[in-house]
Length: 326
Image 1 (tube, rainbow, N blue to C red):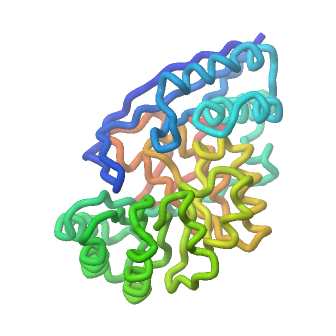
Image 2 (cartoon, one colour; image 1 turned 90 degrees about the vertical axis):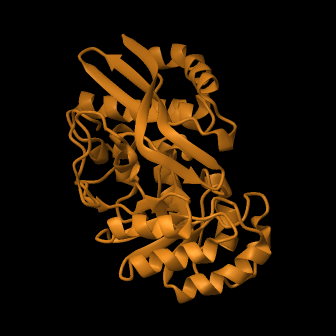
């Protein structure tokens, strides 16, 4: 007989994490556990206010699926039980973990992969003054890729300061919907000059049709504009890349399908995360195999991670131990 347990957890950050929409000092996550016989599967997700989610609502969503999950609903059935979002993500990842443990294989084998290779994650610099962001970049200059948050009048100064502090590091810039189209047209050529590899979500989701037919000098990546396969048809006309996150997709099942379809459409794939523990990053590593850009630095931003967690050396993330997930 199956048993579902759900709880919320709070994990303090090493320092405040600031983006254009605000700041946070902790990761507030939901953990779902599905037990059957001797086996236990776990999944972690982050309710995200930008998408209309809050913890109480996500817990209520999970509870609405309790009877079906405890009656044996599988991952395919879950896609119909709940919409994309944090609640479905927590349950979907728990069911992947449970199925792998029941079968005596690793989760990536269930996904058709014989192995899970290590991935290199970028490291995110919070939105701050140009001087503070340059200092943060100097501390992390050995990392192969930095991602810097922008969203204010001094954006170009911020990027120039970080580039000066880390001249050989690959850079991603993330606007989190903070720019207007006029801002973008002024800023994009400068970002290309500074050898920025990618600009994430410059315009608000819902206002990015303006990008159609415009040739950006720096590749653009959809984040808030891309949740599941349903948005790919619009994204392919506006962006060069899509940022796939399990919390947006509603779990590993949809994230894998979205990545496959995105590649078939000629889009580059980035795999991202909310700020969370290694339990949330581990299933995302399956999607990150072969991705052009990987942003799974959530555990690096925490004051402490769960045990066991992912082994991360510098920016290199090793495959998860079975005791963590999968």
